[in-house]
Structures are given as structure tokens and as C-alpha cells.
Amino acid sequence: MHSSEIRKKFLEFFKTRGHSVIPSASLVPSETDPTALFTTAGMHPLVPYLLGEKHPGGKRVANIQKCVRTGDIDEVGDARHLTFFEMMGNWSFGDYFKKEAIEWSWEFLTDKKWLGLDKNKLAVSIFAGDSDSPFDEEAFDLWKKLGMPEYRIAKLPKKNNWWGPAGQTGPCGPDTEMFYWMGGADKIPDSFNDDNDLWAEIWNDVFMQYNKGEDGKYYPLKQKNVDTGIGLERMAMIMQGKDNVYETDLFEPIINQLRDSVSKSNSETESLSKSMRIIADHIKASVFIIADEVAPSNVGRGYILRRLIRRAVRYGKTLGIKDEFLKEVAEPIFEIYKEFYPELPEKMGMILNAISEEEKKFNKTLEKGLKEFESVSQEGSISGKDAFILFSTYGFPLEMTVELAKEKNIGVDTKGFGKEFEEHQKISRTASAGMFKGGLADAGEKTTRYHTATHLLHKALKIVLGENVNQKGSNITSERLRFDFSWPEKMTKEQIEKVEEIVNGKIKENLPVSWTEMNLDEARKSGAIGLFGHKYEDKVKVYNIGRDDKSFSMEICMGPHAVSTGNLGRFKIVKEEAVSAGTRRIKAILE
Ligand code: ATP
Ligand code: MG
Image (cartoon, rainbow, N blue to C red; front, side):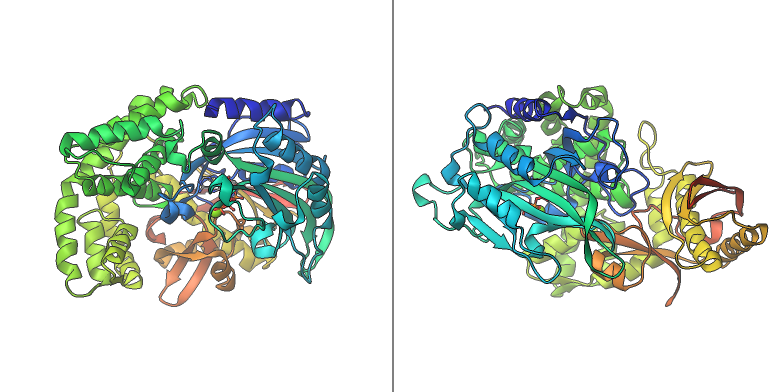
């Protein structure tokens, strides 16, 4: 079954069950969610509706959402993890719940009219229960009733079968995951445990039924939601009888082109090696990321994009490719997806140019950089300084140096790199400035300043009004910042002046701005403020504004930010108004 047939069937199935089909949102999440670089799951753009806001499509929606999971980058090249993939999902916003969700999942997977999968190759997991919340008996009974044998229903803890809350408090609940046996038909084990890699997760149904309160306890939720997701590539793999996603129609033309590119420089024909898989994945992800208006750079999303492209270039070298090749490998991607993502053909020229520019730029330094790496790695480990030189002079993303070092079984002083990076921020900024002119929206100098000013404002509000002031939203243009926060009444003139005074004071101190990547738990423990993300991507960036050990503001954010506060300009609040009960809005400018 062709992947377009799977798409069609999925949407038709849920349409006939009362769902409105909605388009995929951008890979770049909205400003109000600073915790994630990219859209990592179908539910991600729908969070406001899961929290109770009314969706224009009604209480049942379904779609196919493009996703990027940078957290899975090290697994790319295995049978079924990609950085870019599409997630087919159906949602209930306070409408149907477990019964319908589970019955429909089963029907769609196994009914001959739909996917018609062999029931004997399916297994599921459900939430086992713990001291916070009970065993998901309802899901268990539903699966049993549908004919799933008990030995194929694994009862697993929160770590495996639980979602949320998105913040420290809020909606959350158990999930049930569906798995498909990828081994031989004669080798299907009776019992199911999700440690066996031959059981591939294909679908996840999340049941938001609890609200985690301030006291850490779980209370029944008023609006119960369903949030599900199937990976299209994994389903294509199964429906096309392949054992990995790269042999499906969603990759085959890309891999074929790549084989051609390899054979130009290298007479040996390549089997589908891990390097080829990585290149195909990374270039596809890059095409979609650029289509959503991100340009390669040294910060935030642009940095991830740069890493993906440069990593592909490096793997090209390991395959013996001598010439430029990314553009020709990228071309088939437009063929595969043009029908479903019209932004791709529309922006084809711009996307291919951006990829090829980045490839050219990296090609200039890659070979010398690899020599440099060889020479510094003789010492048995890579110092922070050397890693930084590889970054600033040869354009090696830190993660690439770490990867090269791993191949040699040596370590990299990444902390030392961080220190060097901070000290040289000014230099690296100059290096990246002006790299991408024309056609692409890079974070402009001015917007960058407003991002940093927003952090100062957030902290100043907490100082003046109190710690329980929290960000509700933020929007930045190159002309002004807009910041929504929880506060019940109009701010007084004195309070506004005090906030301005604090922010301008910190600007005057010319405090350095730096960031560290950490997981959510560490971020929480370090006292960083900001919205906390969900289980889908747990690495976040924490931006620190302050000198030495004295931090003024620590906030989870993806940036990009100014290098230091000194050149922000004069901060001025031009408006303070209500947006809704309990939420105020500040508009401010930098003069
Ligand atoms: P896994 O344990 O296999 O990494 P997951 O638990 O991270 O999967 P979910 O977050 O539940 O997966 O996402 C829902 C569905 O999206 C999965 O069932 C799978 O079909 C698909 N999916 C998740 N991550 C990837 C990926 N990196 N590449 C391709 N498909 C994916
Ligand atoms: Mg995963």
C-alpha cells in the first residue's frame, strides 16, 4: 500500500466518524511556546484546545502533522527513528473517550477495509497504576473485549505509559500504545514486552483525564481529551512489507539518487548503509525546516538546521563523495511531497539554494577541519579550546566534534567549550552575521534584542509585582515587544516606572547572555522560569542573564538572544492594558 493511500484511508476513517480534517501546522511552534524548537508531535500545536479553548473545527479533529524531533538524532539510521516524520492523529476535545478511541484504533489497524493488519502481530501496553493514580482498568478491559489476549497486554509504569502535565500542573493521563511484530511470522513471541526491539511502536493513544494540582495530587479533569499519533513512515514500512522506513516510498527515490551520487565518485555500489540513511533523513528534515522559513545560523533553530546539513555533508565524505551532492539528493523530496505540502514546490528554488550554500560553505573548511581534528585528537581527548577552534574556524558544530571523538573513543571537554564560546561570543556573532542575506527570515538583530528585553521584563515584573506573575504569552516584532502575564489589576504608574528602571539598570550593567542545554528536570531544579514542555522533547535551553555566579534572569527559551544587554537601547513601556480577566498585556519598545 502506497503511503498516499495510508494518508487517504486515515483521514477518511476519521472523517466518517465525525472528525474535521485540519491542515498540518508549521514546524516552527508559535511564540507562546518557548520550550520547544520544533513541533515534535501532532498534539503540540493543539495544546490550547486540549486546555479548553474552542477549536473552530469542533470537538473532533484529525490531521497529519509534520514533526521534527532533534532528540532522536542519535537513533536516526536505525530501522524506525527519523528527525523528520509525519504523525497522523485524531483528537477529542472533551468529546469521546477511551472506548471510541481504542475501538477505532483497533478497527483502523485490523479491519480489511482499512489497513487489515494481522491481529496476531499486534500487542499493546497500558498504564499499570501507582500510588498517584490507579491501574487503567478501562483500557485493559476494552482491549480484552476486542480480542487482545492478556499476555499481549503489557502493564507498564508512568515512565512508559503516561503523558504530561505540560507544566508542573495541568492536564495529564495514562496512554495505551500499540506495537507491531517486525520479526518473522514464525517467531512471534507469545508474551509482549516493549524491551524487545522487534516490537515496533506504531500508535499511541493518550487519555487526558487528570489534573495535577499545586499539591502534586491528581484530580479528575473536567474536559477529558484524547490525543493520538501514528507515525506515517512506520505504517508505510509495515504496509509495504519492509523492515525499515528507508525502503518505503517515502524514501526510496531519495536513496536511489544518493546511490547515483555515490557512484559518481566511488565505483563500488553501495548497499543501504547507515550513512546513507542519515543523509536521506537529514536532508529531508532540512528541506522541511527551510520551507518553514528557518535559515542556517549559529543559534536556535538555525543551528539545528546547520547541524543537520553539515552532518549530511560529513557522512557524504565517509561514502567517498567528492563533489557537491545535497541539491540533487534533495530534489526527489519535492516530488514525494508536493501534493501534500504545496509550500515545497513554491519555495523549491530558495530551499535548494540555501542547502547548497551551506554545503559549499562547509566544504571549504571540512577537510582542513578533519585534519585539525586528527591532530588535536592525538592528545587523547579534545580540550574545550580545541573544540571551540573546530567550531569557530572550521565550522564544526560541537555535536559533530563529540561524534567524531566518540568514534575514536575519546572525550570532549564540552564544559570548556561552553566557556570559550561565551568568551568569544562576539567573534562568532560576527562570523555568522550576514551569512544569509535575502529570501530567508533569519532572526534580525532587532528582534534578537527584543527577545532579551522580554526576559529582563519578565524578571522585573516578578520583582515588582511578585513571584506569582507568570508569562501568558509573548509576541515580538522588530518594532516592539508584547508580553502577556497573569495579574489581576491595572499596574500603577509607580509600578510601571519601577519595572522600567530595573530593566534599564540591567541594560546599563551590560550583563552577558549565555545559555546551557539541560533536561527539564535540571532546568526546574535550577530555578529557571518559563513554560515547561511536555514529554516529547526533554532537552531545553536555559538562557542566563548575569555575570559570574550572579544571575539576574534564568529562563527556558530557544532564543536567539543578544550577546549582552549593553546594546539593547532604552527600554520603555508604551502601553499596559487588560487582555482578559486576570491577564494584562504590556507593549514596550527599545529606543
Ligand atoms: P519510540 O519509543 O519508538 O521512540 P515514541 O514513544 O517516542 O516512540 P510517541 O512520542 O508516542 O513515540 O509518538 C507517536 C508515534 O509517532 C509513534 O508511535 C511512532 O509511530 C511515531 N514516531 C515517534 N518518534 C518517531 C521518530 N523519531 N521517527 C519516526 N516516527 C516516530
Ligand atoms: Mg521516541
